[in-house]
Image (cartoon, rainbow, N blue to C red; front, side, top):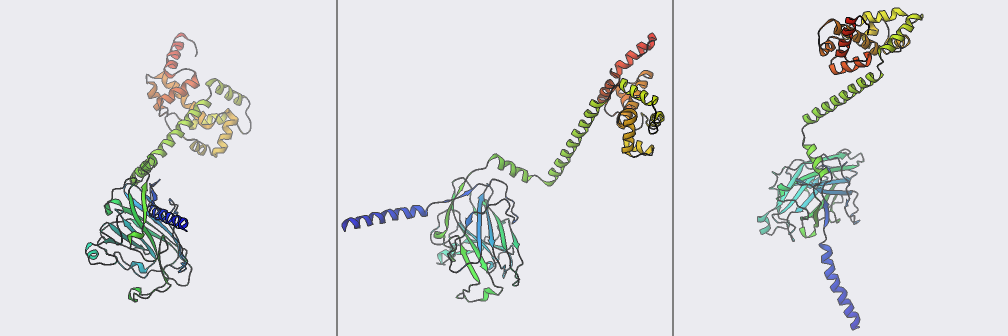
Length: 432
């Protein structure tokens, strides 16, 4: 008997030690992995805090919540399934907002409150009508012995929040899906400097109202089943810090988050400018690529001359020697002409013109236009003292360096070397 009594006392002592330790365990609030946009849309969230359902009364709502933080804010998200959405109270700083569907959040910023609220405790009440009221612990009410010493003197706080309802409000004839709520509580508004390891107490609550009525005029003793209020532990009586859960801030700002936050602070004009810049760069790359491709496929003068002679010697019904003469009549070195404009002037479609060129010269229209300009450039080099850059501009080449590359690919020598060799050969009576 004595042995059993000793065993019981030992077990009791261990239990007395274990329970307080267990009660002091903190849940973690992780540092945000990405920028949180407070818009009521929970795409960036994965709410994982469940509200207990003790079965009495049988709550029809099912709710999840999520918490995260960064250097500026504590973020809280709610996802609530509610078949009937009701709003009985409207207006900011309305202390009776809990007579509408919505949520409540209690925060003990110093993690030191006992049985009643003190000056470091806050209550945030948000209805699905997107109205909000902020309460704070009140010293005078505390000294007067009020059961929940709080007042809504902190209504000057600016707290970003938003609500999205899936369904219709105050329509008894339909079945709604529920609502989501997001709120950002700035740390400086509650006098807290956020650091990893900082502890605070929180209670998250759901106000489930399933009736449309002037509830504020009901007697306090009336508690119908249409009014369901419950917190994380499934209890319906809030506002007592000793029942709130302990949480600890965990994590820190990483490079990816810093970059994400920086990008979200940039103005819209910056993004418009960047979009235009990227579009311009892409166009420039594409333009340069087409020029390089054109240069690689551009043939030498000898192969073109042989091809044209073969066509002129074997004229057909579709393509004959007059076709080339007609093209030359429409292309001038000092005037820009596109393939589409050339096709229109020759009463052909672009596709038909391309086929005719291929049959006549094995060249594309653009290649033949370029060869005509190069031939006229060669004449200018011989008959004038213009620089290669001036000749390029007169013959429709906007970039002298590109003109030099194509000229050399066609004639086999650079423009200035062509002039020097040609004039030397003419002087000696030889042909180039």
